[in-house]
Image 1 (cartoon, one colour):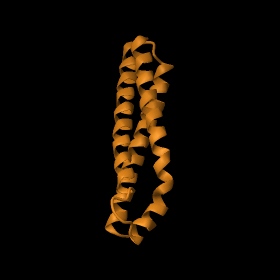
Image 2: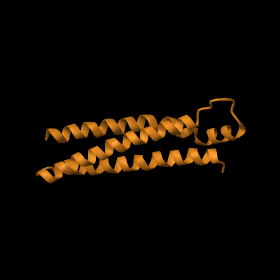
Image 3: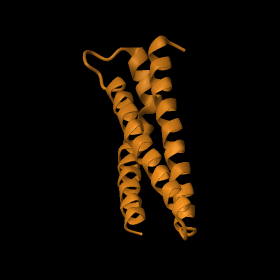
Image 4: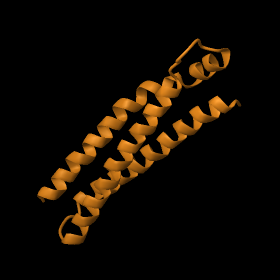
Amino acid sequence: MSDYEKQVRASLLQTAALVIISIIAFIASLACVFFIQNKPFKIWLLSGVAVMAISAILAKSRHDHFVALLTPNTFATSEFSAVYLKYRKYQSIGSCLLLILAVAGVALGLYGSLI
């Protein structure tokens, strides 16, 4: 595995880790919505939503770095072409998913602050 592929893989794994954190925070925040009867649950909801939105935005940043690594800036080498063919399927998935996670976090936070 070349250094270039290690950079691409590291960026993709960082994105995946942040997406998992964001999804777990979203599920935990949704669970808090059903138990909002007193103040501590509302604080947990707003904290979870903040973690979710921030991790989704950080994941979007890492995904943009991943996409930039897969964009050729000069003539493409055989190493670049091999890495590009291996990881190109992950390029289009991230942008929409991360935007939806960030918007859902903000929307759930607004709902939690209105309760």
